Length: 220
Length: 369
View 1 (cartoon, each protein chain N blue to C red):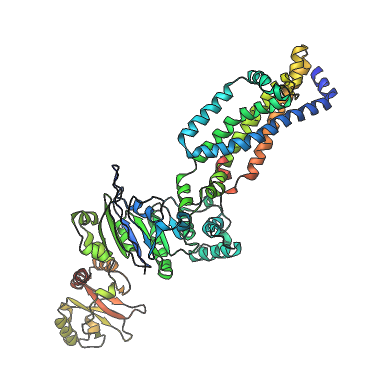
View 2: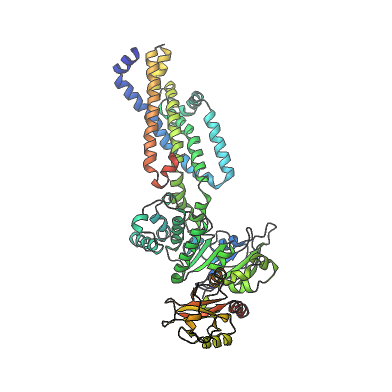
């Protein structure tokens, strides 16, 4: 009851923090898409490159987020962004690489070789093949990677509150330091709801941008 | 004139997939590359559109060296059909058909109307099928779309890699017939890979038989069946190859025409004379319109007082002169008729088939070719 009352009393702050939170995650994931999708496509050309890149991205994701934030303080301090929004975004960009690269790579590698052969045999260039056939067919799996990245990073961004990046994590960190369960629970619930809502929204986007010709198979 | 000569010899230590193969295919003909799996027939085909680069040797299309052409431009000018069909699942039927026209930068409306035309050609109502996705088509329909997609930009040359391999036998026959009808009008130069001898005999103007990357024989189906070049080819064709040749000869080519026509009201004596002159066991009798109305056998015309009609037996079967000998022989077996009347579209008697005439026509063809 107390928690509910706290939520109602602090609606505006919660909204503000949620927006901060989303801005970290969405800006970062947008950057990550811009880097990871091309990387995922590029490494389909070489088995060795794929192994190296996927291994590196896997190592990256095993670094605990709190340690990554700590590492970035000395690295980014010279440009005046040791703490706050910028390191939070960078961390999320890095964590998003693995799910997006891996899904993009896997999805494109898994495109039916017969389709690839048909496309080449009909005279498509590599870029046309990617644009017309391989990326559209890989899209549902790439989107799944993006959704994984978003949901995972909504959780990680909560920790960014410790480096002053704001967001819903602020409620959690204050709840812990002030031994205030109301703030703690509010933060936790809000983060969860945000993750669920973002996932559903992206599922809708995925449906809209997937060709009707492959839609049913993917959802089945 | 169309020259398609391919010389390919691998000097590598690796596996020699195709070894020094040369042949020339006239424009507008279907050439079936035939052989057991791993014999190099598909590799040979893929070197034509340079999906596989020849180690050495040259392919000429219409006198032009294809290695001098940009491979992407080359492929857009060659229709390509693969066994797995390879329709793009993210594109509609119309979009699939328009892939090459779009790549060539055709006007959208022109490409669409081409798709309509092609769908009509294979009996798929465009209004129903244009906007469907491949998964909403049956196997046979997908195969048809796969073929017309390759025809979309009207390429003079088509490569087909076991295009009907994935279809059930009944539909395969239908699609083969449909395709031959289309080819009759389109006159494309077609390289067709198959491992099915019956399909090859049916479709091909010329057959190239491969083994271990070598071209064993390149010949017309009739020549191939009549005179296999070596034991491998003979074994591959099978000991029943004489029967397969039956499919290549039409009734009109094999029937006898130099016999006396017996009419219903002729006296039996005349019929008997005709029979004796022909040396056959039986002869057909015709009615006023020239249609076979009965069979007269040797023992039946002994009663010299009667007319031919009174001595005749019913005609169990006749065969169209446009049919092939396989059908005729099947009828002769099934109906136990050593003499089979051959009729035209209107049912008028044009000739007769006997076992001897069939054997003779096969041996004549063997000697000709």
